[in-house]
Figure 1 (spheres, rainbow, N blue to C red):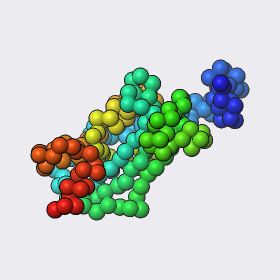
Figure 2 (figure 1 turned 90 degrees about the vertical axis):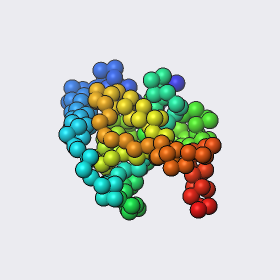
Figure 3 (figure 1 turned 135 degrees about the horizontal axis):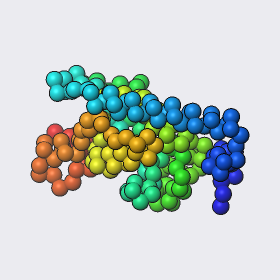
Figure 4 (figure 1 turned 30 degrees about the vertical axis):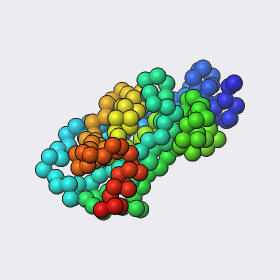
Amino acid sequence: MKDMRPTGRMWHLYKMGGLTPAITSMFDAQSAQQMAFIRSIMKEQRKNSLYEISLRTMELVVFDLETTGFSPYNGDEIISFGAVSVAGTEIKDESTYYSLVHPKKSIPEEIEKLTGITNEMVADAPDLLHALRGFLEFVRQKVLVAHGSGHDKHFLNAALWRTSKVNLSHRLLDTMMIAKWLHPKLNKYDLDTLLDCTASK
C-alpha cells in the first residue's frame, strides 16, 4: 500500500521526477547540506588525537540506537537515536539528544513490543539523513560509548555510508568489554546484571 500522508506523497513525486525543478532543487540542496555536514564531522574526527586526554576529563557521549532488527545490511533500519553527554564522571542531564526516525519499512510487531516504538510514533519523524545529522551535531568530536557496541557500530556505519558515503571515524568505547575485564567471573553482562552486581558492593 502506498503512503498517502502528505510527506509520503511528496517523496513519491520527488523520486518519480514529478516535482517542479525549483522544488526538486530545494530537496537536493537540503540533502547536500546534510551530507556535507556529516562528511565534515567525519573528516575532522580523523584529525582528532585523544591519546593524551585523561578519562577523568574526557568528554563522552553515551548513546543507544533502536532498530527494526539486527542486520543493517539486510534491510533493517535505525528507528531512534538516544544520547547523553558526559564530562569525566559528571553526567550532564540537561545535555541530551533524542530523535525518532521514519524508516522505509514498517516496524515489526515484535520490535514494537521490545522497544515501545510504534509505526504510528515514527509516521511523522525525520528521515534518517536529518536525524543522523542531528545526532552528529550533538556528538561533534566527542568519544562515543555504547554497551555491546557492535550492533550500534554496524548500524551507524551502514547509515553513514547509505546517506553520505563515509565510515564512522569516532573512537568507540564498549562498556560491555570493560565490564568483562572488571568482572571476569560473571555469567552475563547485560545492564541489569551489571547494575545488580554494582548495587551489591
